[in-house]
Image (cartoon, rainbow, N blue to C red; front, top):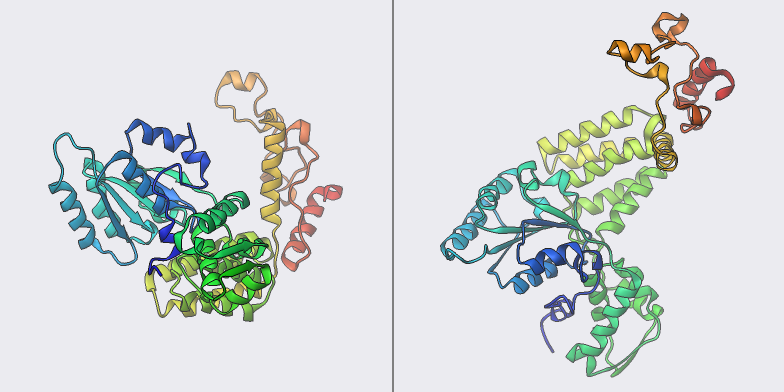
Length: 423
């Protein structure tokens, strides 16, 4: 039996074997055209775990017949980066194309590590391919990001995953020696969550647990085998998205105990505290919002603090913020308001701004009525005066609806005092 994991044995070696990401590497797609032209610029591949970022980087290098250097941001430092750059520099010939430097999880590189890459990318000593599961806008320094094209990879669809499963059962030598009947597949797809590597790991776990030559794969069999084998947490992919989803939903649902439990799962699993703090910052506006505006300030201070302090002390700061957000009243009114307004803009287009609200810096604009009849609110009692602000076509439309919490009920009282029957 091979010691090599199934996912590694089946790693595609060319575009014909590669499954998914047709929007990038299908015939005539943007990244495929760049590769076919031979003029590859530095790129960052952004997407969830197990969608083919590392595989795609290796296929690109093979397709272009370029030297391939690989580093992992988890266990590489500035010294490692400089050593690879020196190797690339020393092995280069005048007419040879740039070597490819692949950096997995580039979002985990510090600013100093990323700075050490910048010169080599700028000078063309290497062509960088970075892989990240996090938004590179947050984690990659601006000078480096500006020199890279970002491509977004998507979770694999059901058809892609089934193709991969059948391909594994038919083509892998070790598996093909046994009689495998794929009677049900829903549990395997559910556990994989669109992650190809995870799907193949699931298949391998199930098959390794069975001794019979003939194996009938059912949802019940898969579930029973995985309950005993799946890791509790893997910051690199296995349960990363399940745990952060449970964390966010527990805070949204007002359960401080569950919220702190999932926070502990992430901390114990070695999750980046900046990742957790960033999710709390988003949640403070999306789910607590105007029901408790101080929640955003708490989350912002938490985000700043964990950047400065690090572990292990950051666990206390994250716990305080988590409990505060979980026990705060909730409102998503700001979230729904902006989405409703965006939907209206896309539906009705850019409607003309009412004349009385327009700026009038020139005589011509004043003659055309710009700014005419505008009422300056501070000149009226209570610093308010009734006038129209929305374009004429949608002047009676509502986007913001105060929700039933103490903070927004006060806002509603104020709005009704100003606008009477409108609210």
